[in-house]
Length: 364
Image (cartoon, rainbow, N blue to C red; front, top):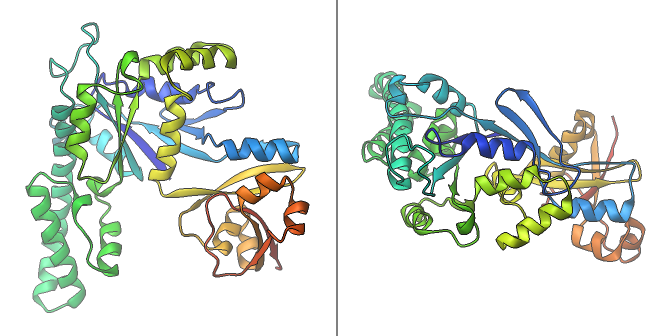
């Protein structure tokens, strides 16, 4: 599961990506690795794993990770292949969610590709290019399905009805994610279409340092524009974040943050938001050898969660022993949780909750 950083040229995308790649501000142990030149695997900051480490004192700790992709800047005409349009659209299609960076700061030394700062226009430029590409995809698909629908094929008729609604939505300059699926068939079809504008989106307002806490007039404009989109808006001073990552010690970074009025780096907030945007959550295993955060999809059952460790765990699943993180943290150990009756035994139907501390029993 990957989240792609998108935006116009010179809005701070690559600087943000580099901040995430060097996000020392969260803790000393914040590794990052590059799979390809523009894909980073970033640890998800989570105070719960620090608490488990404190209690269990394991030999090693493994945090949850999220893949962040730095995608080339998009320009007008990208849907027709202008600039790096084709590469941009191919890269974004491979991502599961979009982190849309908008320039919300004035600085005469940093040239804006369109001459002046206007996050509303910038957002619309990218939205229109993505919508045009999706319109092309929908119309090609309609050409194929129309013939089958005319013969009375019920599945084709269902698909055609949904495609017609999506096409109408895109022609109104609205994204596919605003189309409400009416049943499970439509939910599955929408997934199958792989439309770019159906991907969940998170807006990052890149502001000057003085606006990092409360935002500014540009941020207010963005919030007003996206209020009906069911999308989160995050304020981040990418320049200040870059300065923070240059500082050597944890103490220096904390002083810098306090001076800005922040309790933690914006990069940490962004990484957690991206993880949530991808509909992912964490469960923990905690033993003296290792305390580890495992990534699963929201709604996964206990056997699915076990399968993330090893496929044999899922195939031979018998039961899961579960302790809520809050109980583990307050009582201080697995043994004390057992004594207090806070360890539960759950079966195959159990839906794992975010933060569960789990052991699996299996037989292969």
